[in-house]
Length: 201
Image (tube, rainbow, N blue to C red; front, side, top):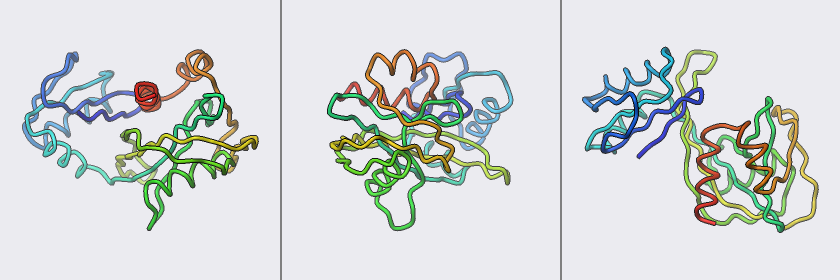
């Protein structure tokens, strides 16, 4: 199953129909175009496209967009708190585009270090990936895939926000603060990856 977000609306591609208000049986490329159009141009909050050949469906879907890959981390410290960045009034996790020649792991570590100023990071395992759609200023439609890794911070430095990237704050949050402060002011993708993190903890 693939979950793709666009402006906080959700498109789920699955093998069998999900319990959604709006469902479309996959009948080729046009079905995907209709689904994206409905999400973009109507008030419909979520759509399910379903079909037996899910990998073929996903391949068709990725061909509709320019694919950009990014990597980031869910970082915990010695007290078990998680590291968040604040950008444009929303809480987020540190992440960024993978540069040419970098592995996913190298990109994830570099981006966390750049966005938070923290260096003593230990990369543990791959958590999952998330997908979201957006349109660039030049009109290009982008499918952004972000690969997330579990990381541990073993140093004692104070995190420093990378202000040139629009980050206004970096903060460690315990589970209570995550529930009270982060979840009401973050993105659906981030909620998904935090859920994966806690399920595997």
